[in-house]
Image (tube, rainbow, N blue to C red; front, side, top):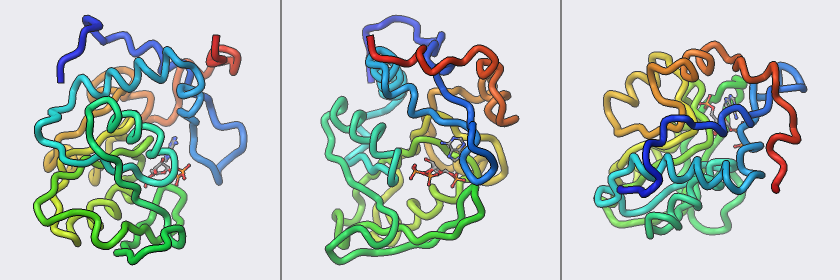
Length: 206
Ligand SMILES: O=P(O)(O)OC[C@H]1O[C@H](OP(=O)(O)OP(=O)(O)O)[C@H](O)[C@@H]1O
Ligand SMILES: Nc1ncnc2[nH]cnc12
């Protein structure tokens, strides 16, 4: 996809991501502070869309819950529909389900409406963050159960580990934090230098 904003290598909005203040039972950081600020949220969406090959995507699937925020934004920008992949027990129609274990060690079921698309449909999987890759695995399974094709994966970051290395080998992965960068190194270490100067006010809408 083309874009008209010139080089997009500063990714200034990463420093708006908030550190965990609640302890081990929660994710180590909160990217949702980016979404509060219009310029940050739209620059993030622009950066993600700039690296997508839209001709290869039939529908954009968002993973419950925060994946919806990015997936719907991307779907609107690239002119595709939005398919929710939900945590179990929410959809009031027939569903397929899969089981996954995420970064918290919790095992959960995920559901997708049945049927959601015709065989061969190319589905872009979008989540907010990929840590262990467990949640993405549940989504891949749901798409493949209905004979869809995973058209790629999108997230703010995909942390580096064996499972995510396999995703990078198999699928086109588009992330705002780019592999091999200092930001990626800090994300893998689950501590950002920007936490030292982070203030919630930095993300306030202006
Ligand atoms: O790669 P994994 O280890 O599976 O972790 C990634 C998942 O964890 C987070 O969601 P979470 O379920 O915490 O919350 P949400 O409902 O707020 O999206 C994140 O948005 C991914 O969906
Ligand atoms: N939102 C998030 N932030 C950081 N690590 C995560 N792991 C899973 N979700 C995460």
